[in-house]
Length: 201
Length: 201
Image (cartoon, rainbow over all chains, first blue to last red; front, side, top):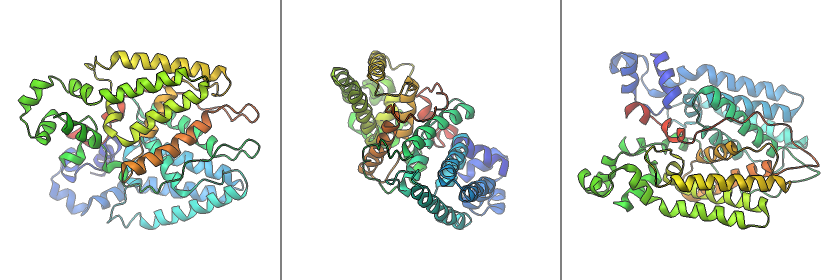
């Protein structure tokens, strides 16, 4: 069941119904619900490994003596994971009311990223007008990529992320113009407004 | 019917079925098909104005004595239209086999944009490693934004587009590192792989 869910999530995101997951796994809906009382619990199990990888990437970045290198590495890793697995993106970004399992990890990640940002600005390598909402903007932008294969999506994502990181790097000698103001973005909008699902569901 | 279609396309993209459009417009499916024999013909009518605006933006950019200013203006205008109207994005980007009405406009736009790119590089303002596929990458990235309101989406899009244009601007005194290779992207993948529609449809 977990394998079937992983495959469905990877191609279609986590908006798919429990009924559809059960059908694909070849089990009854009751059987699926017995093992996973909520879709959140299923998502937690499917993406536990990737969430752990995110947390590890952040720990590694915080241990990096070069905060800008750490900052770039963590964004590159998360965006690469996102590029090859659409399900991970939506799971990672969705703000499920019942997703208590990921809650502490997300809060810890958010604090860690804020600290990394502070250090990268202090070292003069990250432009001063970067705000935490810009990470959400980057993740949304990266999530907009779709290509014929995971390999092509990953390659396109690498180019986009490099373009964005080059723009985020401070250029004291030749500073860029000001940015339009940042906007508070909540990531769980990401899947909700996509596709005709919003109308037919 | 056209108004109902415009509203549905704006919120849910153009993947919605003719049956659903008819239901929302309060007419029978047969009535809808009598006026619009294909969904492409309906899309063509709904987005004729926006397609014309795109073509006009490109003409204006090509008439601009500053090719970099023209290049930025056309990207800003298209991305702003995309940010406030999800339906326009998918209509603009979809490669419908039967969308003959938009075909000549798209070819003309593509040629015009290539010329604009050539001039902006020649003037030394656009980085030399920009390729036409990067425009598709930008449009996909911009399409990844979703927010609580069209106003918030537009503001987020403006910040993303400014970041990207600042990165695309040539910096001969302090050149950025090389970019990972560009990937051929076909824009009609944009909606096809989104949401659970691919599974349930």
